[in-house]
Length: 107
Image 1: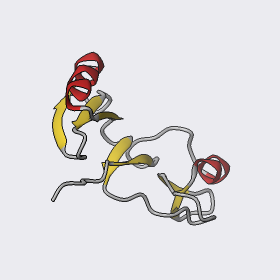
Image 2 (image 1 turned 90 degrees about the horizontal axis):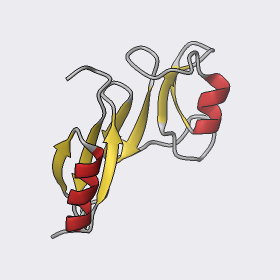
Image 3 (image 1 turned 60 degrees about the vertical axis):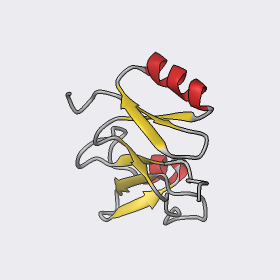
Image 4 (image 1 turned 45 degrees about the vertical axis):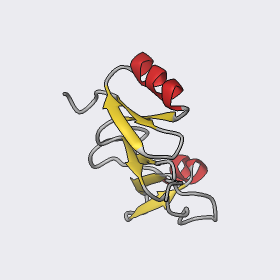
């Protein structure tokens, strides 16, 4: 798999990850059968995480981790990522978008 290939993570209705597939249609069918959800990731660009931290510039979720024009890296909401980013691209050294995995509601 190349770093740019998308992956679809299938979660069941309880929030447990059940499968990772390379085909969106298959992922959606599996999720439908499980009454679950599908989350798409791209290695080094869109990352699945347990928790998305707050934006370093406001109180919104900081779904982007990126180097700022001021120098240091930051967690930022979309508004502040656009305002302070050094690149519009995501990837190694340029930043990534964090997507929170579903919460597990089981015992």
